[in-house]
Image (tube, rainbow, N blue to C red; front, side):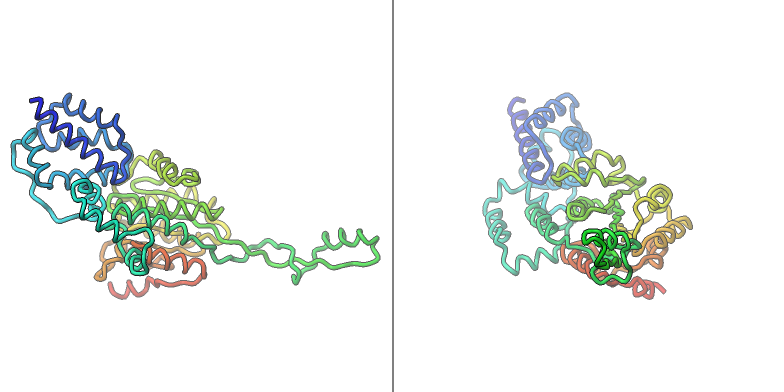
Length: 398
């Protein structure tokens, strides 16, 4: 019994190290708590063991996906699976399934300690110097399939992607050397310096200012593989732009603009996670847009604001209200850009009811699943042009 307890403790310790390598903060205290929890719970089934460890190791909503993938891969591994199943589960091991999106970096973290040769090859391949070929691969690789090291490199690349936006003309006037109107106040003030003998005319002209950016990010279960990466991009955007507002929505709408103003990205994302109760839940786009249009549109959609709607469009309750709310949002902003990760598939067709409802009421319909798509988005915003016409996708459905 002592030998089995020792092996069980070793397996839980190894599993905790893998979680920490995958990005979940797990300390020695959590490992001790997990051992005590397993002993106190009297684990008898795989599900009991899963939720016992989940209650100890998972403290944030966004870590649930990583924990789930790590747990499944750990139980599919030979040797460790047999030992743990012999101690806890008498039934046959779980039938292997096809790898899911996001499992690549979790699998790398799990087996980094026992596959030294493979780890060394990966380190050479992902060298920090990065050749041109490495950069091209990283640019085109899907966020959901990136390893932990590639995600870190992608975050650094996002900071360099954030560029000044194309400025728009405002209603206010500003001092201008070749302005079209005389600034009477400044002209009289400057003439007093010379006793009024000479009058040097001062002019005012149009004032240009970068437009506000408003991001509406879907954090439902179907978007869980991309939400955290997009939050890093929005955090980098918030650092360089003054007027950036970010809202998260799943089954409800949450304003996380203040949370993303934290200088440290990890602190910012932790604050976002703490303020959002419906992470990786369902999707209710219509009700979330209704709350935004009613409570926030007049506050943040000013001076030609650009709205980035980041969602896959898989609405839970697609009805007539969705068409009304998305049309109201479209009329309230200067430019509505819909960013959809589903466009990464070559055979994508707008068949879902929610997508068909929203598509005619947006200005742009663009993919967003890797660094290359983010680069194209930033270039489009900087130039102020329009691309990604949604009419082409509507014609495929018609």
